[in-house]
Every structure is written in C-alpha cells, then in structure tokens.
Image 1 (cartoon, rainbow, N blue to C red):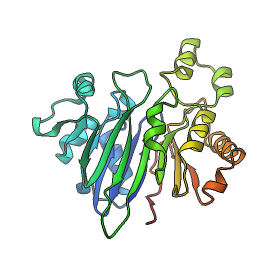
Image 2 (cartoon, helix red, strand yellow):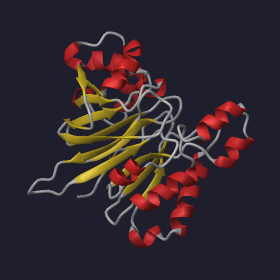
Image 3 (cartoon, one colour):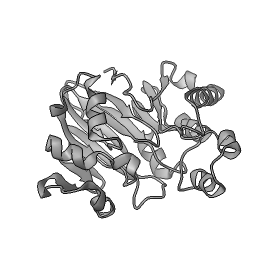
Amino acid sequence: MHFTTLASGSSGNAILVGEDNRHLLVDCGISGKNFLHNLSHLNIPYSEIEGIVVTHEHVDHIRGVGVLARKLKIPIYATTGLWEAMNPSLGKIAENQRIDVQDSFSCAGLDVLLYPTSHDSRESYGLKVSRPKRKDRGDLAVGIATDSGRITAEMHQHLKGCDAFVVEANYDDERLWKGSYPWYLKKRISGHYGHLENKQLAEGLSEWITGNTQRVVLAHLSEENNTPEIALSTVLRILKELNISKKCPDVQVQVAPRHTPHELIILRE
C-alpha cells in the first residue's frame, strides 16, 4: 500500500492512496491540468485512478474534481450533503459518476471510512483508508484529517493505530496572532470550526501513534501563519517530550510540499 500528496495548502489539496496499480484520489483542489502534471512526476498513469473521494466542499478541495472526473470518466464519492453543497461548482456530472456514500464504502480495492471533523463547511470529513486483510498479508491503514478546528472524539476513535497519517498542521499560534490577517479571520482559523494548530496536532498524534506507525506527513500548512520548519520542529519537539519515540522509535515525520508532489511513500508489510 502506498500514498502521497499531490498538493497541500490553502491554494489546493490532493492526496493519492493506492495498492499496486489501483488508486483513489482524496480531493482535488488544484486544476485538472496541474494535477495531471504533478501526477506525471510520480510515473503513475492517470488511467489507474478509479475514483475521487470528497472531504468537504471548499474550493481548495474541489477546484479540479468536476473536470478531472469528466476527463478520466471516474466516479465521485460524496455524502448527500456534500453533493448538495458542491453541485454548483462541479459542472455537468453523469449520473453514473455520482456516488452517494454514507460512512463506509470501497474504492480501488480499498476500504474507506468517513468520520466527521470540525470545520466551517456544510459537512466535513476525515478518512481512514485501509487495505483489506487477507490470509497472505496483513492490513494497513492511512489516516487522513486535513481540516478541523479541534481534535474530535471521532478522530481519536478512527486514527489511533494507523500505519501512516496525512494530517493538518495548519498554523503556528504566535505567527497567526502577530500576523497581518484581519481579526475575524484569525478568530475563524483558531476557532473550533477552523484549523489545527501545530501543538494541537502534535498532541493528537501522541495519542494516535502506535508501535506499527511508520510515517506522518504534515499537511495543509498556512503559507503566512506557518512554515515547514516551524511545523516540523514543533511536532517533533512535543512528540519527544511525550516520549513517543519509546512507543514508536522508527516513525518518520515529514512535511507535504505546497505545490509539488511528495515522494510516493510505500508502507512496509
């Protein structure tokens, strides 16, 4: 099982998860053209993408969803509420490409579980994408949470024990409050329906990381209120303070690039 980010941040988000030559896409908040350009750097044919899962309807998550679904002739998986919220933004989508989902479904041979996050959108979800267990191999799971103003009970329930994470470290508290954003926007970002601060995310990770966890990718960093260096150093410092290395000494923590693809991460069996 493998995964990567194709873009990450307020200018656009896209995450790819797959097994062998079958892949699903989580959101596409960049143009279809940019997505295909970034995908080409990973040597993954676009014909291997079997569907797009939408986490919420904000433009930095759905900008390229409609055009990509039409070009690749693949289905879009979203809840009823999200379909209602994003219909005006997608353009014409064939009925057989409209897949109305609830909390769990399968795509590209992988099991997808949706759980609610806390964000100021019509509906907002995180995902747990799992490889089904078979007699000849164990199960693997990637936990995804890119937009939430707080750590929720559902995040604790579904993310704990994942083999890898793509999780939001959106802002540094000091940079946000000393920065140039207007007051209402600072309140929105830091509120319960905004985004996760670096320290919040680190404390969540300290609960979710277990002995099998291999990789953590910090995603959705604010361009003005965070930096890759601050996010990484803050998370690593708190994990060290909480002795997470004793529980999982080999876990690697990295930052998702904003406009370019991250290297493809292949999980060990």
